[in-house]
Length: 59
Image (tube, rainbow, N blue to C red; front, side, top):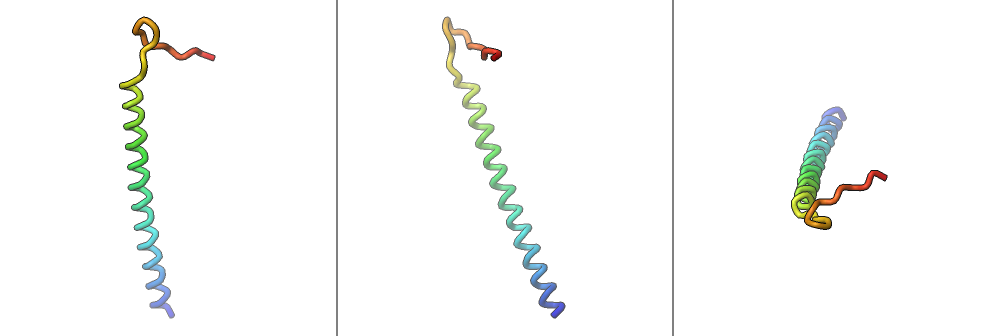
């Protein structure tokens, strides 16, 4: 009974570590996509009147 329990615990540990690795990879990809969108938005923001960039109103 003990060897079977040990094998099951090892399989569970491997599955958890593999799942955590996949989640970390997905989170890195999401972070890189957000940084790319931020940079593209910063580089291609529209100009205001007379060619000046408008400031946000402090509501």
